[in-house]
Amino acid sequence: MSKYAAYGISLADSTGVIAQITNLSGPSLSLDTADVTEHDGDGWEEVVGTILRSGTVTAEIVYDPVDTSHARLLTHLVSKEPEEFTITFPNTGSSTWTFNALVTGFAPSAPVGDALKASITLKPTGKVTT
Image (tube, rainbow, N blue to C red):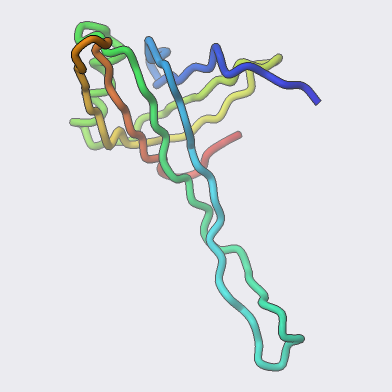
């Protein structure tokens, strides 16, 4: 089994790579379940899978207010429309996860003695293709 460093992961929208990402997490995939345990069963809980959930994607960036990829994120937020995003993993073959998502958060921060940064939140809608 191979092991990979996280360094080199990328997030892109339909126009290109989002610059200066320092941390990326998600989407946090999960499956909802419904209880189908019967009174005449064997006493063990039984469940069926229902809805696949995509959770959220969060990214931390070193924010550059004039960078076009950062400006696009703000444009996506204001448009309230889903955008196609692709996460490319830094493994041999560059595996990808592709999904449509709304940009639901863009929070700049400027602590004294640190870099200008921003936290980005994406909410996938529909299928995440892995």
